[in-house]
Length: 339
Ligand code: C5P
Image 1 (cartoon, rainbow, N blue to C red):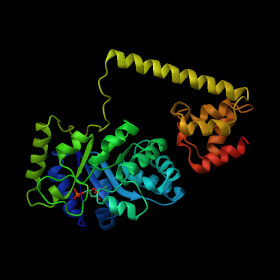
Image 2: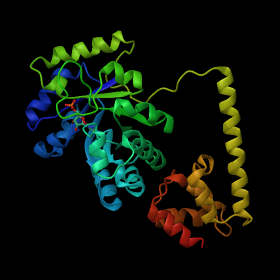
Image 3: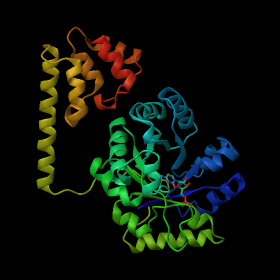
């Protein structure tokens, strides 16, 4: 289990004091809108110097192009994670992942932990948090996001959607009141629910004995069988241990996926399926959706590797992009190309 401290203050000196005092007790730091709007983006580099993962929680939501360029700028500051609102849509999520690049993982905020079911309904997300989180986690997964921010109550849903999405959970409370958070949980409930990273702010920073509170949280985590990640260690979730039967089943599944992909490439080459048909199948079939765009393009009749590379460059498609991760603009351009 990993936990990150939310450096929520408008005073950069206070924030850097917390970093100095708590660096040996936490697994990472979160810089949110309050701090970055007061101290400016130069604060990021100063926190990065502590050598722990840094999550820049600026919750971007804008048109894809703007977010892509902003994400690239933020990533250059050295943050390891950057947040965007999943509700801003597939194209924006894809653009954010593209802009942030490999060194900075995009975390898609699903439903804010401060929102109640009624408030969620008010803004047009009918069906409650579970329905909304399912939809948004699917989008985050398809766009190649590194993880999602979700309440503990929805962590299990996210795991079902895509176990590779890192599940980051704020709204952690123990003895203090809930402040403005609506869907809160204790560290134990969050871990039990499937959260992998706890984000803790006021229960520690809002007290006068924050070092002691951080120690207590670590003891609590140890007691429930979760040793905190050592300083500087990557927070990448480890794959669960699997039995020989599960391994054999996984290998068989991978073999089947390879066979399907090879067949699809062959069908494309001989013109038995069109690019538009393939894209439609990619939306519903994870094996097809996982095909690399570069490979697909090179398999189109009359398009070799060289033309495929040129098309990728023209439409700013990253070399490792999969079909299901294509943005709306890129899909449109390729459909036109092969219509
Ligand atoms: O003080 P507290 O522990 O409530 O801090 C929670 C932090 O997590 C805040 O910085 C808040 O901006 C952030 N956050 C959240 N809900 C989300 C995403 C981020 O509370 N869905």
